[in-house]
Length: 226
Image 1 (cartoon, rainbow, N blue to C red):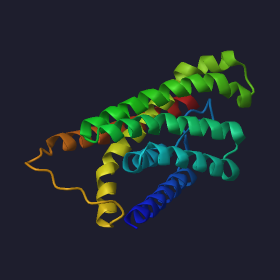
Image 2 (cartoon, rainbow, N blue to C red):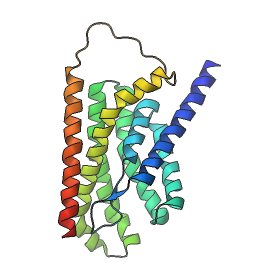
Image 3 (cartoon, rainbow, N blue to C red):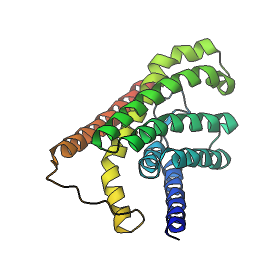
Image 4 (cartoon, rainbow, N blue to C red):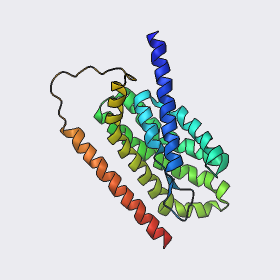
């Protein structure tokens, strides 16, 4: 019975994270590269990364597929190709951190996983934008190649860095709320005095990263519109 209850709660949490992720897309889609109109910042991947940390990489990956398909038939104008690109982008971000944290459940595991997520999403989206974008942008692959460094590279690097920082900042508060609501099992108190200096320093760094990345995106948008 307890196993069934846990499974039901896990499904409910996955549905909750999926709804929140879609809501972020519906409310907040910010275009920052005028030359490439479909490049928009979304906080969806931060929500999915939280799901990957809390529930595991597989539920988060499945949520990314469901959200991308719903997005395709509701608010997206890029069709099935856009849905595929959204799935690839989200999975490239959430799977590294989800897999690494699954086997290394500590601060270093989370940090290493998020760094790998930023690198993985940036690299994979460069490749897939080069291969797929010409199909629905209606321009040559050479023109896409010319946009990789000035457009796709900084956008994906900055977007994924913002989402990684948001994920790190929100993880502890979110999991604390879920445990207090008995939606996750309580964690046994660790023996000894654990230093809280490192988490505080990392959270400050993440806040600075978010602020700096937002400023960088705004500057990209201003310079791109001139």
